[in-house]
Image (cartoon, rainbow, N blue to C red; front, side, top):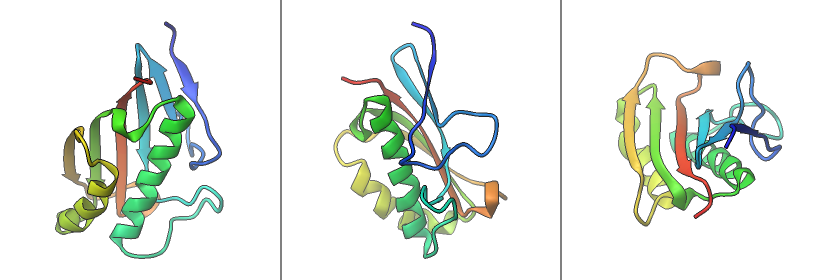
Length: 128
């Protein structure tokens, strides 16, 4: 099965030479999502929980456009500018990954695109 790209207007458009997601070998590889509002193209205002929610909503929209769901995530990586936000982000993350949560890494980084405070990427099974 050749790879194919995924595109939806319900998530921010790629701001560089990459795709929102790629489907290959029965997996969906979702590019990192920063807390951009897909309608305005701007980072959402508010605290880290509102920003985490926007990242996850963007991820969810891309997964749906690919034909799968959050329940099919197998690996998630969270990049945050401040590890002190771990618990606050975890509270929101738990709302989206309730049953059989995916494997996850949580990494503190010095800087993210557009100076975002958080970025989330994922890998999911296609369909199921």
